[in-house]
Image 1 (tube, one colour):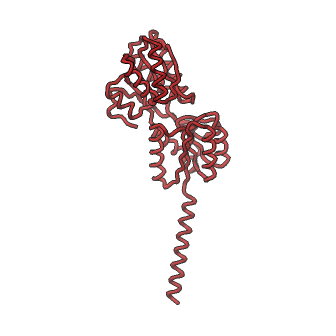
Image 2 (cartoon, helix red, strand yellow):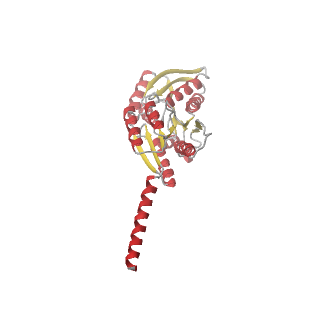
Image 3 (cartoon, one colour):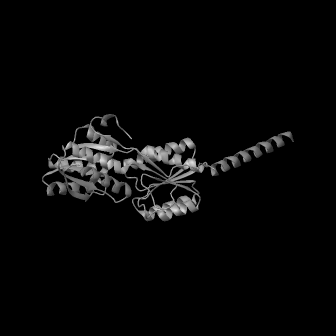
Length: 305
């Protein structure tokens, strides 16, 4: 009889333990993050930092890739909400187009933090780089490298807010130099292969072109290949701080500068803002700007995201 009671007690404890573990798992923090794209080392490094943070918190993490398709991103958010996420970290592929998803998430009770690019709608906090500063710093560097005189061009990208702000900052910097003439702006779509062809055409169309600013390092690497293939002396600057861009700068190529962002810091701060609100903080900032930094031949060798 005693043995039977012991066995029953052990079984009861096992059932209780299993029930507690299942309950704890159900109550585990659930974080969703939807990226505008994952075919970019910048966002890959952001995902890695988020995974590290989630592991430290013992949180469940759901990651999706919109592939620059706003309809897919909205659908991805809907799927996350069906999984009862507590926090939505949103890297919008279209700031205006994603508003319905932001509203859905808020109605479902999720904390919504936009990372890298802001979104329309009731976002709790936006954490992103000082993109206008980045464009300004990079184009000022380019103009100074040309001694304030010469023809330059802008290799533009997808018209999301961070890219628009970089171009705005670039133009503001170029306007400070009377001898600098902006002779061309074309869209390389932040893509190496597209940018390669675009910059080849730029160089052929402008025999006196001396400098190019690219809105991101992916496009800049295509631009660099076009410049090197042409044999022309055209200086190149950009924004991002990607590893291959930093390596090219350190090697003394025509790629002379990139204004680096800090994607890992952005997502860490974004998650921190979301957690603060989830835990009841009432004075969390609505916007947290993250500084950027010039990377050139002087500091490229020791730099990494």
